[in-house]
Image (cartoon, rainbow, N blue to C red; front, side, top):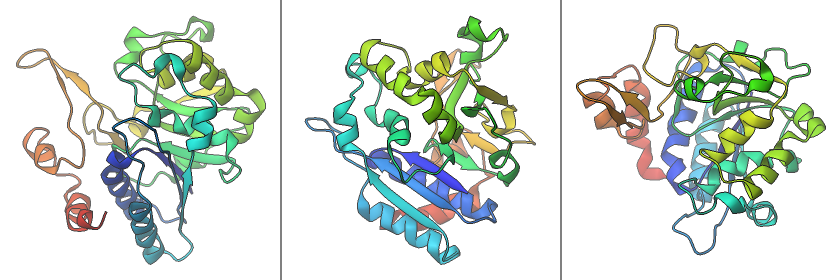
Length: 273
């Protein structure tokens, strides 16, 4: 099973937690790909090689056939920076996945995961679904599906969250999807630019059930939980952001103990990052 992560040093804790959840719930070989880069004159620092090596060690201890490949995408980013969106709240590390078509190491089938995700159950059926003629598979964005719509698709709801994407790289290379998205990010300023561009330009996409990217709250059938920023309406309207690595707030704010075994292991290991 091929898994893609991207990010700077701030993603290290999340990738560790996600990896622990994959190791718990996946019985197949795991081959992780971690993309990072160096951004000059910024507050960003790349995902460290030390953290990548440590996570690789955990993978191999579980199964000697597991692997992690650490890839520096700095040169690719400098060739095609998201010029129109560099002055926004957008983090340029979010677009690193869009260079996957330029990396020969990336296999034809790969599952992209944001770093604020916990895998709760076996994802084999989702991962191995038929991808013939599909560029990607994703889940509707919990709130964005209401506010954003691509009328070309003729679907009532079609705006996907980009935090969980099963990618058919062979088809993406054929259609030039990622190349088109990178160009759009260079010339057009957008809200959530990489997600917006993917939704605008992806033609061959499949909408998967909510349980494969649960963005609001844990449900009995949740397979993958995504700790996104959400809107809450009680006791007053407000936004709520709680990330898995903020274990105290996972307990005190979300009142969630579903992942205590994973999070306790994370707390023991995090000093090694």
